[in-house]
Length: 371
Image 1 (cartoon, one colour):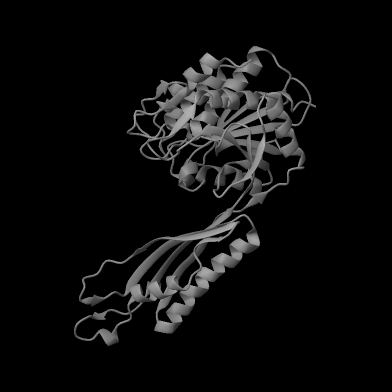
Image 2: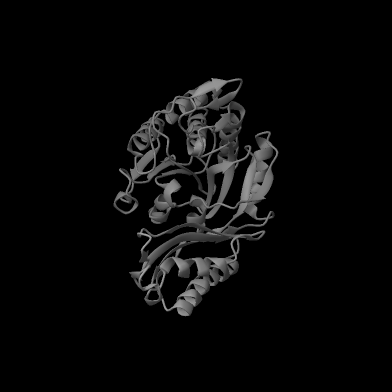
């Protein structure tokens, strides 16, 4: 029932609109224009001051024409770098960039699918509850848009977030929470050749701390990593300050807390051992979410997949998304696959079939959500 030719044209148009994180203004304007044309109510929040974007999150509402529980569909407007000047190429049913940028299927595949489903509903006057569509900013740089969105504007209690790799039909029922670790060790400067014993090497302290940390794959639900250790000193100076940036993730909050505290304990112990001082610490990025396969909303999505001719599959993710923040703010939010592949690389690609299947799934889920 969806207009496949229009869907592909819309997607190709969208990926050619530059919208690297914090530069989503033109993309927001285009989506607003497209959805306002079919009767959606449009609102842009004032989150820009907090996210650093040139626009706020975009909220679009299609009032219901029948009873039923409202549903929210969401996707993010921003892309990673290099995402400017995208020139998409369609060949043998696969959409790619020209090879010097990302494609932007992450997450404009989700955006285009939502827009096409709403257009189809209006064109065919299909029975539907109130449908809310949310297009967020700055997802790729710390989920900022969904962190600072106006949740009071959302009436739906359930949300389908179109933002995962894997074929349409993939349902992410669990995703991890994350702590970011930003720490600095303060030692004592000294001349490395004349009086090194008078110094406390901040680099040495950090290395000692990291050597005692459990890192990388902790268990099937938990990971941890140190991204960088930085200090800039001449070789004849015992470095007095060194900084560390890392993270830990887990799909269980108790494991996340335990891993975060373990990493902090290693830093504190090393500072105590060498007589250094510790600054900074952990910052919660987002919380985990988890739903069972028999959850009513999971079952609703499974039924919609089958109605759209798709084979549903349940999976757990190792990454965060807007769904994490939504779940923490009272929404039952699940991430759905859109077929995006090799994301965040210049080899990113998306099949036309997955684009069509994703739009068909959104349509099936919206229409079957009536009371």
